[in-house]
Image 1 (cartoon, rainbow, N blue to C red):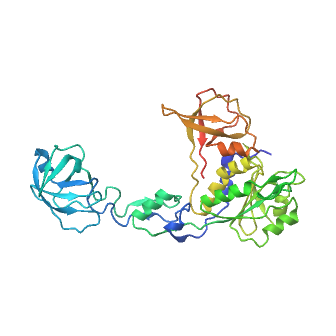
Image 2: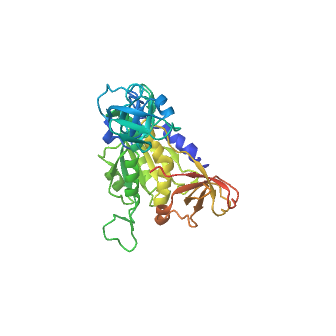
Image 3: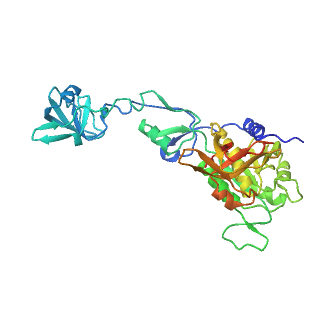
Length: 399
């Protein structure tokens, strides 16, 4: 059976999900969420001509010839309007304060000296006016954030500066995370000689939370269909993510357990590494299930390529994945028949060039390598050997 490409697998997954109902959300609870409606400016920002520096508000005509100007008042941020500056006059002004009527220039305080009720300008007109014009950042009614965009602290600041206390976000998906394997033991507990700690569930819970979802990590299931079904039964979720049990061995019981519930497989494997066993299904009620490989590196690479876009889609957004380019800091051999996503470190040289160094050992069980990686280097199927300095595609983790 020919396995689908990453793009084909992701398209099949996204086509099978529908967005959740949107909700009005306070800004303080919207980080990581997806906008369901655009954010428009409620007024201009700044809403008045404002000073960009501490200094003196004057007329350009008076600055051009140098002058001794009469001080007529003071303008501070948040102060009352009504102050005006006429010919031969100046007003003390502070950063962020409204420019008095008639003024069109700010002389910075270092270029002037006060002499009683007058200010003496000690320099001619410079290249900058130090005036922030009304609407210089954005205008009333302007779309500042499009529907579907993922909110972050900078975008929340933009929404707040536009006057919004709440925004309409896509529904927050509840994500149940089910690790699987007899070999697993929870961190903090005593591990047997042939057991390993459950690293995938905490990592994926953090990934889900950063992508705007609500994670619920379930107890890890044994390699037993009844145990798997008992853990799923009665759990409320919008998306189920399983870890492990994704292959076709005698101990891989997750897919058979879900098939017994009536799950319909839409993707079964993908032409990629790490992560070939990834799969996707829909339960009879339409809820999606994403099956991830058990090795943490495989699971996290698949989370970047599939789980992130799925979480965006159910929140009404679009995938954020944007491949960039960098140059290799060391040569790479030719690639095999599958997309290869190599964990790598990236550095920016003094020349501004971004150079990536893939780790020499790409074994998908190596959590230490994943923790050191800044980017994933994508090597297409059958890519020829790449010399030092060759340009490659890179993907920065979405977390």
